[in-house]
Image (cartoon, rainbow, N blue to C red; front, side, top):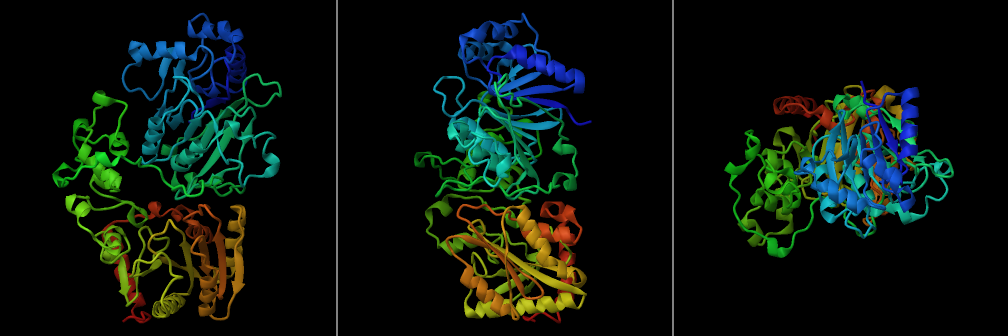
Length: 595
């Protein structure tokens, strides 16, 4: 049975009113497992101190396990200082420090499990000057490290709203006054883009707002934002909200990836010049170490004492200090700082496939000191460069002069193909005439191969700064369903808040010439080449983060295989991959332009 949680906005010390409402709701719709409070928990004036202290000092009972993040207000420093010194609160506690019976302070930042739900929180706020009530860079860094851990976060708790949450939302649903940025925080926006929770809960703005669900980059699930008003507010805005989410750990992939019809694209954009990811904090140059990584020190499946501390490897620090049961390995931390894949460091291997953007070789002294060409470095680290040790050669089905064809990891359907330039190019719209000619021959060969099986070819590509090595995706669809393609792509785009430009050409080469003219290197482009010569395209706005799997997800819907929209749900063994590649080679042999 799904847990039943109550969510509250800023209590502001009005605990009598809050708990009276909680008990009333529990009688009519309960029982509830816990109460979570976001926004300022402590009183903002001395008049409410006696009422507040009655609960803290045991003269009144907190009726339900209650967790809070807003550790600021009158008397907060005194109470929380005393709480921190209690013997039962010593050590590393992410699931709350006990203030009194049933009342828990979520200090700093952390992650814990609450009745099966994965909960991540950031306590305090950015603007506070007091010892308590202010989150630190370490708190933010720890959350960025937690965001790299596998699994989906169910609840993300912050006190302040993320800046920009109303972007691309239905205007009529946005409450008056939320344009005031005094209670919104750009750091929270950056964190929620990295954490990608199913629900984001915040207070401090003084109004209730339940935003339409929105998509996350590189994830199939959606995020729902809920902003809660202050307890006892004069405008009678909703301050208590009931939620009963099924824990992600018990959901099927199709349940997790379900999207309501009103889903929008992600509302947040990064400030100009900001990097998409800040997950790996920069270290000072003086902290550099040169050493050769000993592969015998890779992660083993042993006791906790042999395992690496994830937080230390990611950020260089760990709140547990000497009490941590895992290794604080400086060598592993240095590898992470140099951009090596965390899975490779901690598990000894990476299973993310071509979508992983980190290095897959341990960086040693010779790499740091020997000058190397930029292209040599790229090919070492790129999943798609044929000279890379990371290339999955068993997936390759054809190799030409300028391009090669390969099956993708976790293909949507059996004959799903990638056309990949051999040269390290960012997209297929910047080719030489010879390269464009060979690409055209490969496209025609695949069209004819699919046509022999009663299918038509759909080509699509995302041109973005996030894509370092181009790959043009090719998916066969039954010819009987090809006529539905323009409408289904256009409808999907409209649901996400953008429109696809439609142009029809009698010759596919004219379509590509049009795309080359439309392409702006400073921006980005998503395009689809349909079987009837229609080209659909969308120019990305500056700082727009386009859903990376949009093309695949639309085709998964058309083919009625929504469970396969995420490639990670479609992974098979290397032996099975090799067999699929060999089978396709035989089918493609008579159509392969490079045979």
